[in-house]
Length: 226
Image (tube, rainbow, N blue to C red; front, side):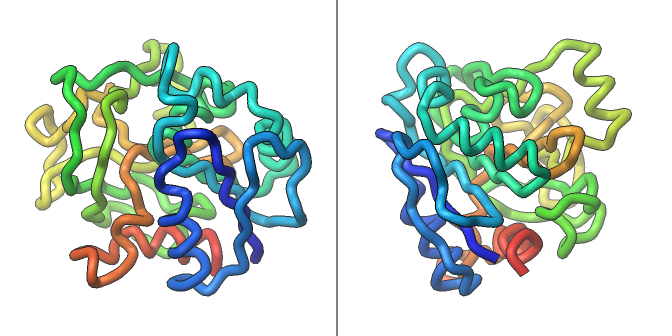
């Protein structure tokens, strides 16, 4: 397994992802600047969190035009795994690699805190080391994490089991009180129909070592890398 982490102007979680992949999971990894049209040989592409292009216009709206995104599209079309975290999720939505869109948080404020999410489906490269219904504590840090889609798209996501993570309480309860941003159907992460592209708002790289108070995010990296 080899990985690349795509770096955009404004990325601020690229080194975190690089560290977890190289030093925690022991996976060979390289940085790729967003202007690179071709990637080195790789198995996994990671689009990290941050504020690509300063989040001007809409989050991810400019980054989707970066030359590197053509390689991301080819990589995904070949059925290989792509993981978009926070801003990376937003970029995947803007690029049309995942359905739906991101709105501003329901509070209209930036939210940064640990949250609980429930694993809804394990039949993906990213969740194969988890169990259905398993609860993970992973931090969020975003101002536009309010996932939205229309009724038809939501039905399709449900019918195809494309909803992979939902916000919940530490006891697994799903409800508005445990939804930190107002996301439709409490969605915290989804995959494409082929199940090889995952977008998630929580940051698994910030919950992959004991020193960070949670190692729950490590299961996502281990699922896709080992």
